[in-house]
Structures are given as C-alpha cells and as structure tokens.
Length: 139
Ligand code: FAD
Image (cartoon, rainbow, N blue to C red; front, side, top):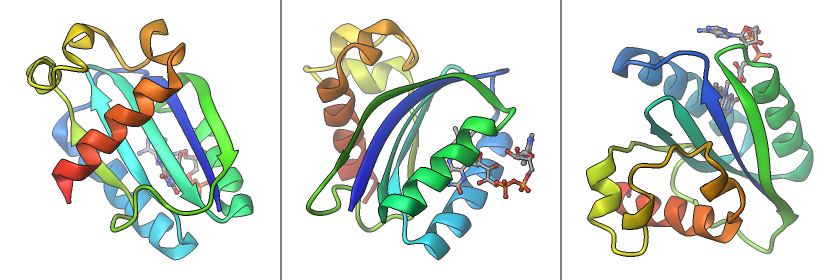
C-alpha cells in the first residue's frame, strides 16, 4: 500500500460546480483503481491525500500533475504504508473556510493560510492531521 500528500494552487478560484465536476471524475476513476483519499479546497488552494496500490497511486499522481486546472504542485510526503487511513471514500472532500480551522484549536493559527503556503508545505505531519480531522467529519 502506498500513500502520498501534495498541495497545489488552482489556476483560478473554483466555484461549487467546478469542484463537484472535479470530484465526480476523481471518485469514478479512483473507485475503479482502488484509490481512496481526501481532497481539501480553500480559496484556490488544494491539499490531497491519495492511497492505494503503489503503481496506481503513482500513475494517478502523474495525471494530476499534468492537469491544467492547477499549478505549483508540491509533494509533501510519499511512503509505503501498512493500511489505509482514508478508507470509506474513493475521495472524501471538504471545501474549507477560515472558520472551519478556527473551530479546531490545533489548526486555528492557520486559518488565514492557503494550503499551498509554506506553513503547510514545511509540516507534512500537520497536513496529515488536518486531512484526517476533516475525513472523520465527512464520514
Ligand atoms: P482526460 O480526461 O483524457 O483529459 C485530458 C487532459 O485534459 C488531462 O490533462 C486532464 O487533466 C485535462 N482536463 C480534463 N478535464 C478538464 C477540465 N474540466 N478542465 C481543464 N482540463 C481538463 N484524477 C483522479 O483520477 N483521481 C484523483 O484523485 C484526482 N484528483 C485531482 C485533484 C485535483 C486538485 C485536480 C486538479 C485533478 C484531479 N484529478 C484526479 C483529475 C486528473 O488530473 C485527471 O484530469 C483525470 O485523472 C483524467 O485524466 P486523463 O489523463 O484520463 O485525462
């Protein structure tokens, strides 16, 4: 089992319709490939965890990197893992606003930060905790 987290910046702010179209595509494709994970969006920035069979995760990430809808893709962490952390979803999703972070004491100080900011990119363990926190609430 393989796992990775990356952040990126959308080339423009995405509306609910754009995000739902993207999510629908991700979920269909990931369900076929046995990939699970969590996607967060905040003010034009993305954070995503992908997990599954190594080759499938790597191939999916290659496609994601070629996607013209976003840029500045930054890989925070990749590794072999024993088991899934984000099972139950082919791709969990949350469109995050500042107040979602303010309500979580461990993340309140990051409420004004984009996911693509150095604050997150320098702290993969914080990114992982954040993804897990939203995953628990979307189940
Ligand atoms: P095709 O569907 O053949 O498309 C050809 C090209 O057009 C690709 O470069 C594609 O990226 C691009 N494209 C497709 N739709 C649009 C559009 N509406 N606007 C602009 N360009 C477009 N895919 C997954 O399978 N799993 C994921 O978990 C996943 N997560 C993603 C997260 C983010 C933040 C983004 C931006 C994309 C994500 N994708 C994911 C989509 C992925 O980047 C590919 O678009 C998708 O996997 C289809 O790839 P394809 O090579 O079959 O492209």
